[in-house]
Length: 402
Image (cartoon, rainbow, N blue to C red):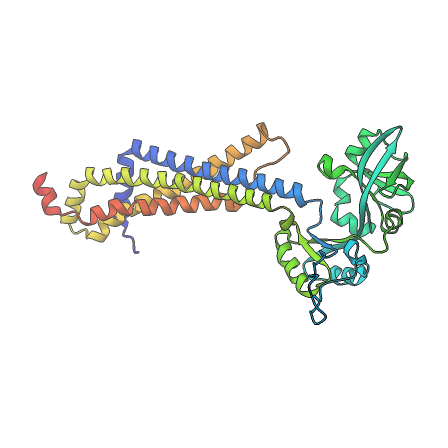
């Protein structure tokens, strides 16, 4: 579309002539863009916070002993046996865990893999007893998966011998400090005493009900010959399910579970949030477009005499239509620029006065650009209605009817 200078000049003259209407349109577009930006940033920040709380300090993929596959008691001698069936010992723990561990720690997309000896126990001190998860791991790999560098609130992240890292909530309830000794009883009735060398905060009371030991010490404490699981951290958490599906094709004697499988309700809620945000933004944009189309349509009627004279002077149908297209694009561009500034100001004020630290706004360039592009597009489309009306305008009838 080639614009002629006089078309732009006339379009700006029409906008300036109706300053009140123009100001209202610009205000509406600016508020619409700001609302879309704030809404998408708020929901994006909330989703990031929920995901961070769920998997930020947790494994992304779990390698577990396989489920027992039932065999029909009516099967005869000629019946085939499912190759995935494994000895009973493998149903409660992974005996040949080293081959899986060696493979996973070198797999593409994996940032850390850690064999884990896990079980339940009871921590006892001064007559008080608390149920606790016992987890043995390799210190370096476990530090990556559970983010010891960020989540460790006191002490050090070393586990070995009788050293143990305890969850913050349990340590506070039992009044345990660094260097204190505490007794842990396993599910078989036995137990041992450990020294507290670190206190970790994993973000919730339930997650903090845990004690970390070294892998070998936990295996001995829980009476395991192998490991109970291998926990995996990946570079892109949302690629965990695809990676797990690929690993399932490599191994059939263990089970791979991604964090998505374990948190389907969370993912459903996140999709619902994104869907509701999209619906709201669509109707905001639709309302803006209706407003622009209505005002410019009225302007086309009000300016019909001037347009008729211009067409009588040689302006063609396309030129008359482009005048309103220029107005629509100008309103969209200027209104979007104002909306970006307003939206950022609203977001900054929200973080300053209402930010609780629990979640923030996702103040990303994409959240600014997308509403602006949609607003400009909607403004351009809305201007097509008066543009077509201007193109069909007959100069003879306009001049004849005054």
